[in-house]
Picture 1 (cartoon, rainbow, N blue to C red):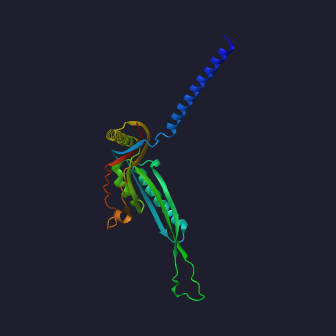
Picture 2: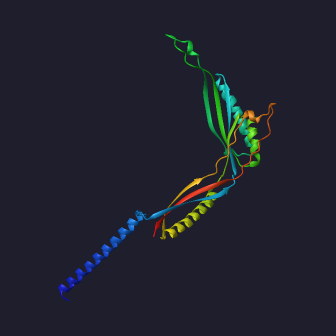
Amino acid sequence: MNTDKMRGYLYAALIILALIAAYAAVSFVGAYSSSIEPTSYRSFAVTADGKAIAVPDIAEFTFSVVTEGGKDLSSLQSQNTASTNGAIDFVKSEGVDSKDIQTSGYSISPRYEYSNCGSYSGSNVCPPPTIVGYTVTQSVDVKVRDFSKIGDILSGVVAKGANNVSSLNFTLDDPTSVEAEARAEAIKKAQVQADEIAKEGGFSVGRLLSIDESQNMPQPVYYNMSAKESYGLGGGPSAAPSIEAGSEEVRVSVTLRYEIK
């Protein structure tokens, strides 16, 4: 075989390789373009809700001890601490674990007396307000897992020194399984909806491009009880309130975006 034929074969092979490389490059660019911009204005979205019934297994509430007095701040703090510790000890005696009791707030606020400056005029200067005492407030968050004791604990902490009980709400310790049930229902509904839309629109459902989710957890049920409500008119403690946790719906909303084929 002469040199000219060899050179011709070599040129032909190079041309074929160049064409193959160009085709591969074009295919890669097209695939990459689709991957980074999958919608290309040819997509549609469907939204559906799913729900599941949740039975709360935790009751949460907050009790506070508010102590007001004169300028002897140390004495007020001691009184407040004694009352708070008494209420905490009572909660523990009812079977509540230490990990479910947490101090959520502690504050000391001065109380002022203001002068009546209506009669001051000219060069007279209205005197500044003076501190006449302090208010010490300590708040504690409690989780109760034995629902049969909720009413007794609510009224008992007041009898032991708390003068405000508030923000009772029921929740789930681990909502994962209930959320999963609601999510599965929402996705199933969305998939059916997507197929119906595609059928009516005369196209096919392509790949799933994205999923967006939002959740609507059970709304807390609040119960507020002041010291006045916790004691009868005769000065003795009233009966423990009857508290029912009931059940709530956990809702999950999903939005599925599909490619149009």
